[in-house]
Length: 193
Image: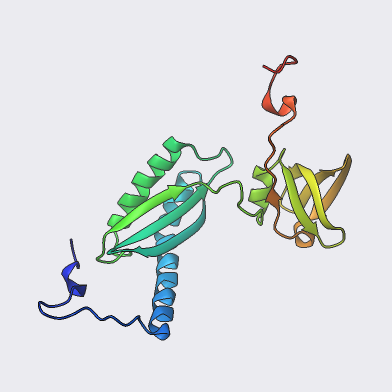
């Protein structure tokens, strides 16, 4: 393992028992933040070439390894096969550069969960047909079904009324989990099958 012995204590030397000072932790966090930006610069073009969007990059320590969590999304969603394929491409791109340093890492690629906040136009576009909760500047908290979303705003069905909101007037939206979708959304026949 490259670099593995660099941080091990010398024979007969005790490991320090005191926690790292706060300043050292903060500097380490800043370093990870810089690393995340560099990693995004390396993997962003690979993800874009696959027709996906990079939603987030997070690096954390996991013992002697680093854990790299990458969240991707696309208009068609992200299947398990998509995640596996992009994971192989990202791994090859990362291994071809020194951006991950000398330490081994574990790469996790996933799609955003249903609890991801709707903050960008593409998030709203991907939520068309879904029930959402959002705070609007002129109306306060509202629930409605996303009817349409474009570059300028979103149209919601709020209690049967079509209402248009610009993104600047909306806070982060949250998709509401529904257990009883209308049958037309699920493609079910009249008898429920």
